Length: 140
Image (spheres, rainbow, N blue to C red):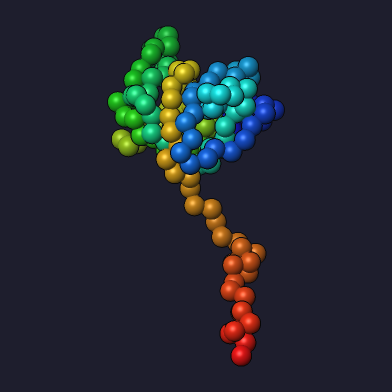
């Protein structure tokens, strides 16, 4: 998924093994884009596993001002939070220690690789389509 402020941006789904870069879009939010096409948002499904090239740098509101921070992890799972509030950012990264960071707070230019996409639910139509069709030899 892409954050609500990227809904009007050109976008496409992520692929396993793809290298992405955090990017500041002209919509007031950060997201992922392929290095060769920074005008297209690359949308991730909740549960997508990512490996970053370096520990993730982001901004967090301190007591009075925004302060740069670092999460000392290079692995994260993409999540969607605050879904009950349509006017908030939803895209977040969850780290092995349970810490969540909004994607829009992550500094631009950080590189990540898509390790794994989440399993898709199987529908009744999918099961029917995968049913084995008997061959001619099986009929005799």
